[in-house]
Length: 164
Image 1 (cartoon, rainbow, N blue to C red):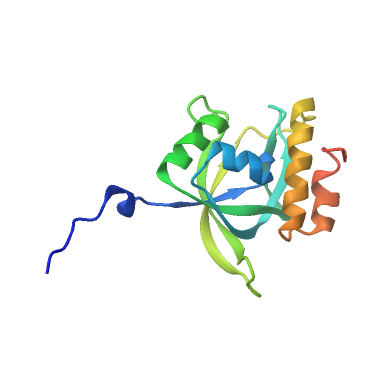
Image 2 (image 1 turned 90 degrees about the vertical axis):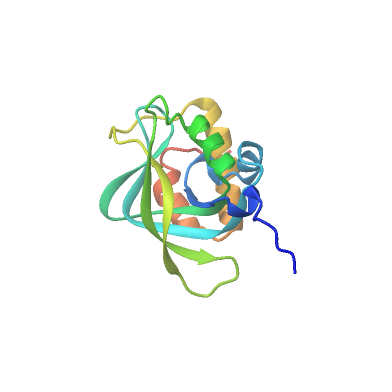
């Protein structure tokens, strides 16, 4: 019986990515990372969502707070694409692997997984770029459609992102 060597595509490692800013917008993620697969939502305990001094979304350690996001499965190429969009090479964000409470689509309970999170370690708050408000509102709509609680959006995102 003949066997074949695994194709490179079969050996590819896939990352689990926690999108919490404009990458909540599924259409944007599909354009940036065409091989992605949305697999559910997750929460990041003891972190807080802010708009950074760079005027984009960021998460910072903050006891008692929580950040919600979407979990995407990314190919190696998708992750390289995302690194470029997130400015990893120029120091805009650092890539960290952080445990999150994951709820798969259709699941009743969560499980802890390690997810890739882009973090800007320069802490400080600002206001978002005008164009970013539009992208965030598109992402907020998609996040709500996939189960991110409206109370979270109102408490953490709306102080920075006015409704469209």
